[in-house]
Image (cartoon, rainbow, N blue to C red; front, side):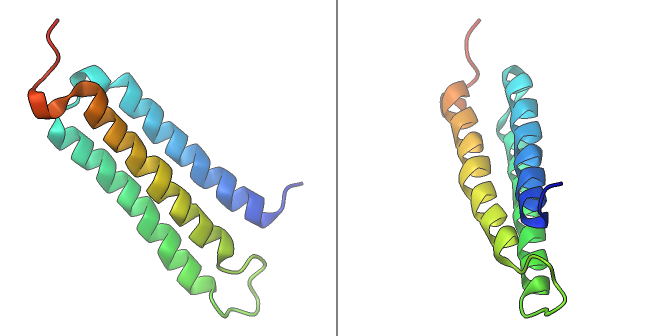
Length: 100
């Protein structure tokens, strides 16, 4: 049985993976506005981890404390928004859609 800390970080990484896979599968059809919505999904995950971390801060009955939530928030910021930047670069959205 895994520890609560491992479960929290694993679940956050699985969510990042699912969103990144969805981005990759839809890469041909994405526009700037679609990538904005993916960034909002990542931002929602960051805010959720921040709220949960602050909720566990100073809570004596908490099994994990705030550390795994803050670590997950940092991972989402680095990996999630890096994948959005990678999609921008891959598709060269600033120059228009790729020519087929």
